[in-house]
Amino acid sequence: MGMRLAASSATPFRLQQNSEINVTPFVDIMLVLLIIFMVSIPPVTTAVKVDLPPAPAGARPQAPPTYVSLQSDGRVFVGDQPTSLSTLPADLAAAIGGSNPRNERVYVRADMTVRYEAFMAVINRLKATGYARVGLVGEEI
Image (cartoon, rainbow, N blue to C red):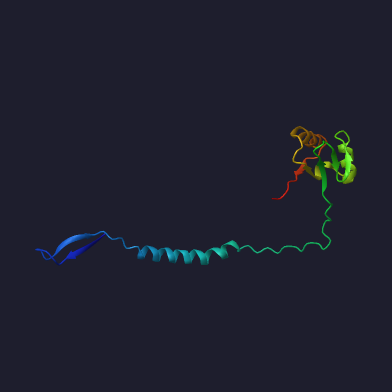
């Protein structure tokens, strides 16, 4: 807080308080700190140099996704082939190719009007037979 000398009134050098806040030094300091941080942070984040090996040209082929579909009338499909809840694991293994079910991803899609009970029956059947990586498919809005 500063002091101001008053030249008017009976006493020639009467002191009064100046209650105005001068923010110019504060803004100057903040701008200097901002510039220092902007200059010093990018070299810190890229300080570690790593030579990454090139990816092989023939990367692992992606298998097409396997879909299990439920229709509103209760029918179940593996891909385009109709199946039932009891034969779902065998038909799914035939569609995938007989590999380990724990490593395979299966996508489940269902009609909007499918009962929750029927949907969960399919999910539980997949989990019981070892398909742990089950994804749900929804429509993009």
